[in-house]
Image (cartoon, rainbow, N blue to C red; front, top):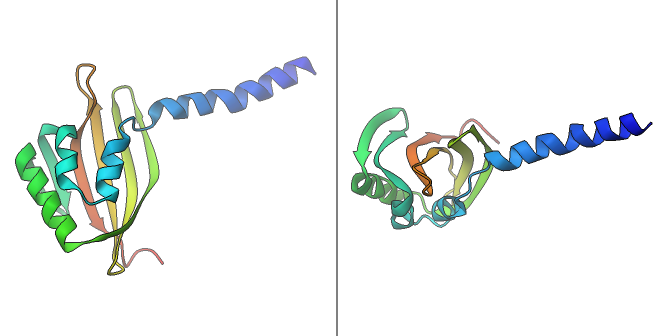
Length: 136
């Protein structure tokens, strides 16, 4: 009986501990997207960021990425942003969320972040896909 209790405890607690380590530590990134604040993303952007927007990919500087995101947010006023999935391994993490606009459009926004030299999480990649027709 004691073995069963220990095994049950380990089965539920170890995955929870591992999952907790994979979460994006920088809630400010998620809040900046929720609030459509491109300039608030700037401290968390790597020197170069791969932006894949609607299937077109390019590598931008930090300043260019802020402008690209500012343009996206201006054209797509936010209603809600919800993180649907997050994970990672080691110093590389990611999250995928649904960005809903006040006009009723939905976008899937994915960010890949990497912790650099013990600093905060730095965004290496941002991907935005039209999600409106794919989900109810």
